Each structure stands twice: as C-alpha cells, then as structure tokens.
Length: 349
Image (cartoon, rainbow, N blue to C red; front, side, top):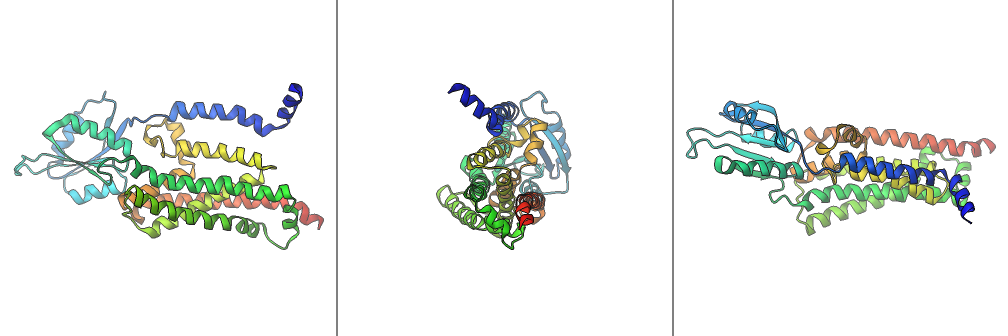
C-alpha cells in the first residue's frame, strides 16, 4: 500500500510541486515580507518657515528604527497643499511650519496619513518623542482603527476568492462532466465561452462587493469619502483580472482538486504581498516588486485611497491603468488557452 501511494504521488506532479514549492514560498514570503516596522517615512515640509523646519528634520538621528526621507520643501505652500499631498499618497507625513508671530511661537503642525496604518504608528512614536514642541493631527483615520484599513482590503480579498477559486472550479467541472466537448462543437468563439462562464460569477461578486462595502461602513464605521463611480469602475476592472486568472487556472487543470490547489498557490502571495497584512514599504525590495505584479496590491491602493482619503481620478489613475492592463493580459491569455483546448474538437467536426 505504501509503495502504491508513492507511485500515485509520483504521477501527480501538481501535488508534488505544491508540497515542495509551497513551503519554500511561505519561507521566502514570511522571511522577507513579515515585517510590521516601516523603516522610512516620506516627509514634506511646507509653510513660511519651511527652511528652518527642514534643517531640524535633516538633523534628526538617522540610526533610529524609522528614518525620515525629506521629499519636498515648499515655503509657499500651505495647509491645503499639505493635505492634498497626504490625500494623493505622495508623502506619509506633512509638516506645516507655523508663523513666528503666532501666539504659540510658530510651533509646527505634523499632519500624519492615518490610512497607512503602520507608517502612521511609526510617525506617532516620533511625534510623541518631540512632546509639546509640535502639534500633531492624524488625518483619514484619527484613532488608527485597524478595521478602517482592513475593510477596504477585505473587499478585494473577497473578490479575489470568488474570481480565482470559484471561477476556476466552474470550467473544470465542464471538463469532468464531459460537457466541454459540447461547448467546443457549438458555434461559439472562445471569447464568448469565457464571457458566458464568468458572467454569473461577475454578477455575484458585484453583489458581494456592494454588500460587504455597506456592512463595513455600517458595522465598523468605515468612511466612504471618495467617488462611488471611481470605486465601482476600479472594482469591476479588478474583478475581470481575477476572473481571468480563475479561467486561466481552469484551462491548466484537469480536476477540481488540481484547480483548487493552483488557485490556493496564487492566492497566498496576493494575501501576503499586497500590503493587506504587511506594509509594502517594510518589505525587501525584491519581494516588494513581486507584490506590485499582483492585482490585489493595486486594488488595495485604490480602495483605501477612495474610501479613506477621498482620493480622486487625478491620484488613482495609476492603479486603474495597471489593473486594466492586467485584466486585458490575463483575459487574453485565458482565451488563447481555451481556444487551444477546444481546437481539436472543432478540427474533428
């Protein structure tokens, strides 16, 4: 019996690959990505005394766990421009220098982006060390609530689960039931077959997206400050991308078990490397770039930007463009793979 099981396992290449590759993948991911400490904060200084505050920032100790990267100094900008930079995710911290003629002697105000939870926590520690020498204000997530940051990301996770696992099983069931050959002899193009297969899942995922968003706003008090149209368009594009991944998985799988295995292997990196659990800024550079190749990373950026910061098209165009490119690429590859599967049946017909 033992010999028989080893022989069957040897023939199941996908299971063997999962048993070998998945532990290595988890080791690499947790070794390089499992880090909650943000090493560097992007800082902008604005206001009349920006030059003086710039010198103070430059003199900050560089051997601290979190260092300050001074990216912009503008003496002519004011509070509005500082808040816009935080809203558009250009910086993590904006320091608004005061006027020396003020009653408080021109004490600077430190504005912190609370939607970037771990960066905001690191910034709060630095601000606390300064004591009453500065005033501080946390924007977009004043109480640094974890649920406010997680709910927009969980929306993307739910869409990823439906699009990747549920959709991948759908087409495999056609192959297991023998109905894929019937689809092959019907006068339908591969694009029509793929669209027909993913349409029910797309509608179901849209319903789940609306439901989870409303529950997140109602139960956890998560704000929705931005455009619902922008959020809906970004979610629809992201959903096409993950649905395409699900269809692509189904074309390389022969059984439901194989489809689930491959889907889980594609979901694990998206969960861990998307910035949903571990901040991207705290990851090693190589692992961070892997995260930038994953659709969930860009949807998390878009959903948190729209819901928490009220970001608009001018700052969210990059996630929308990247997700669009991913959706077109993955959907196109899935159609090509499906055409290859049904071509022999059409040739026989």
